Image: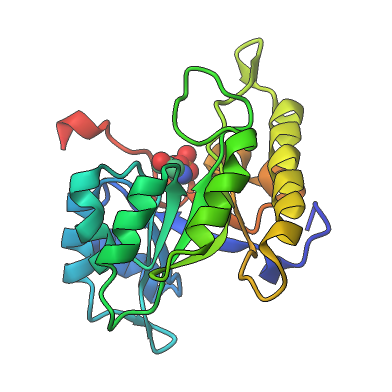
Length: 226
Ligand SMILES: *Cc1c(COP(=O)(O)O)cnc(C)c1O
């Protein structure tokens, strides 16, 4: 690969938001197992509709990559395998309490905002460690790493890929710095970053899981028209 990374060190999350269950079924038939969704209600309908689908004898793996309001935590705890967007302890606590005891722990990432601008989601790097340490104590959750959705850095209207890579490298440095605080035996192994437009830069910057939507499923129609 261009970034000299072993192909198996980066997982592909196929972001299927706004696309119908049949599109997911097709991707699963081609061997894709992990899917990302942003809108909880829409996602749960698909998760239920596709509960019969197996990839390599395993059920599909569903990742919540959208913001979660308090009144949606139960649905998320009951239906998803991963949540990438933890940025408040209160939401993490509800997810932990509401995770059904017959399911494995819910895998979670802390959403971090390394270059805070008008994009409000995510905790600042200075708050992230405290949140991570608190989340690591919650019995229903399995803390896996960090996630970021950087605001695209533009230069002359074009994506400034060097600047994006610098942001990604900053998240990876943070991930490494936290590892020693979380201790050996933790499952701190995930850096969720990179979307269709900046996937190569994210991988070069240390991503272990890229979230790819439009490059797999095609352009999305805006959500209000759903
Ligand atoms: C929609 C979305 C993606 C996928 O974006 P594409 O540009 O279609 O690849 C990835 N991550 C998050 C958090 C998203 O909301």
